[in-house]
Structure formats: C-alpha cells, structure tokens
Figure 1: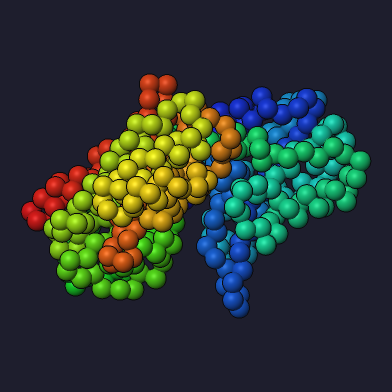
Figure 2: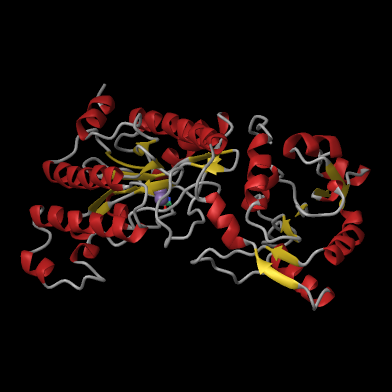
Length: 428
Ligand code: GLY
Ligand code: MN
Ligand code: MN
C-alpha cells in the first residue's frame, strides 16, 4: 500500500459501531470488489471495496469479512478470510497479506484462508437467526454488472432458503456518513495533498499550456505524496468550463479564458474533492470577476448554512434562492422569470443545474441517507457554479466541510479562493 500504516483502531471502532446496529444472533458478511475485466486479458486497477476497508482496512482482492457478535465461541465473532499466498502468486503478483500482517492491519485476531470459508460459514449460518448481506444501494448507482457481494447473495439464498436475509447497506450508510476523528485525519491528509497540487497550478498555468499538461502536473504532485486522483479530473478551459463532466482534457488554455479544475487527491482510500476556477493569463476580466464573486458569495453562505439538524434538500433550496438573487444582479435572469418559477425547478437551474454538494469520504459521492438531517461529523462538499455557454465561460468553486456541533468547519480554508489573492499569486 502506498499509504502509511493506519491505526487499526479506526477499523475496530467501526466494527464496534456496526455491532450495535445488528439484530441479536445475526451475522454480517462483506466481500471484496472484483478485479474488473476490460479487453483481452486486461483488467482495471483494483479498487478496494469501501465497506470492507471501512470495517477492516483490507484492500486485497477476494477477501471476505464475517462479523457475528453473538457467536457462541468468541473466536468466531470476527473472522477475516484471505487468499492464501503461494509460490505462483509470489512470482506473478508479489506480496499478499500473511495472517500476521492482516491481523495488524485490521485488529482481527481470527484470520483464515479462503479455503476454510465454506465450512466455517456453514457452521455459523446454522448458529445464526439472520444474515446481513451487502449490496450497492447508492441511489444513482449503475448496477448493470453483478458484484461479488451480489453473487454471494444468490449463492446464500440457494444454500440457505429458509434463512432470514437482511440488507446491510442501510446500516453501513448510516455509519459511514458521519466520520470518526481517525477517519477525518486521513481525509485531511487527502486535502493537504490536494492543496499542494492546486498551489502548484497557480504557478504553472499560463497561456499555451494544455489541459493535459495541467493533469500531468497534478498527477505528479499527488502521486509523489502517496496520493492519487480521487476521480477523473476535470481540467476545462474556456467554453469547456460549462461541460459538467468534461474529461477529455485535450485542449490548449488560451489568454482571456478561465480554467476550471475539478481535481483532487485521495489518500488511504479517503477522498478530497476540490474545484477552483482561475484566469489562464492571471487576470480575470471584469465580467468574469463579477460572476466569480457571485459564486463565491453563494459558496460562503452555503458553507455557513450547513448546520447540524438541517436537511440536505432545505440546504440546497436556500442556495437556489440565493443563486436566483445573484443571477438577477448579473442580468442573467429577469424578475418575472423568478416570480413565475416552478418551485421544483427554480429559475437558477438554467445556469446552475447541478446539486449544491454531496457527502464525501471513502467514496467521492459518498453514501448517506439524504432524508436524514446533517449530524456532527458529516463531511460534505459545497460546490455552487454558474455556467454561461453564451459568454464562453463558467465558474464552479468547491470546498469540503465538516458539520460540527459548533457549526460547519471548512477543511479547505487554506486553499486560495479570493479572486484578488489568486491574481496576486499568479502574477508573483
Ligand atoms: N468531482 C466530482 C464532484 O464534484 O462531484
Ligand atoms: Mn468536484
Ligand atoms: Mn463534488
């Protein structure tokens, strides 16, 4: 692993939190992600399963975690099953966890090889009243491909037709949305790496550089600090500012354009999510600055508005009311348009068509029930934008915050954002 060793208290604490949510005499099983195939014999790089990592710190393929708090024998209350290392694996893939390493990483004493899973699992299933199985219940998930967890569910339903199966995902969503202090430490490391990358871009960007050169410079900053892109970076110059999921990053940055960079690093599977929009030549035009400052005001008000107890949808509505006012001042909306707007589709959506933010953590669009009010420990992105294709530019600004009892804390307050500050650094 590129990241430094993590205190296994992070994972044992999470297992303890989960235990309090499980029904009596029930067990839970979490599977690793598949190595996803592409063409010929190629696969994508392994992407650890967030839930498995959250509960064990294990990132290795094919691993299985079993939790059974009421198991009769104490040794069966937490078991980790791993691929058994062998000479062939050692030659072709190198390091695989030993039992001792896995114990240290996870804090789980009982580590077994995968070959032992069927027998152990059968005996524990016969001892349990219910089994919590996992699946991807993210609202907008594209579930065309069957995961290891789903194949496991089908197998279990076939092998144990009279058992009571339950959904593990809602419990994990409930836990993962609020971050523990140990999780916040890793998230802050991701933000620190992201900050260094952005600061370097303020000195690197000038007319003539290409979007892919910016991407390459960011990759270098992140990777040399043990990070990696948290998501495919959006490095969008000029009219590409307005393409919300732009990914081509193949155009030159020209004088007079803005460069929108939605790019951030992950660290130890925890993700930052940052957007800044900067002038390619180091100076905003008057119009660009007016739009920029309008977005900045909505960002700041929305950060202040992310208080414990508020519902996501109410928070977002407040930002839309504010954005309507800003768009009126910019002459982009007419008062009549606001007056006769459909409350479900407010007038500002013409220029600000995406959500205000999302939970952030082990996944960039992290899990969490949007119908539950913000609780202390909730980490959110705040990312208003104004996109004006007719004027050939758009602005988005995105910070990451944590909700606390004493109000929201901006985890990105050290990253330059004032237009004047950005200009002055770029012209230094
Ligand atoms: N970078 C993805 C997002 O901002 O949601
Ligand atoms: Mn983003
Ligand atoms: Mn985001």
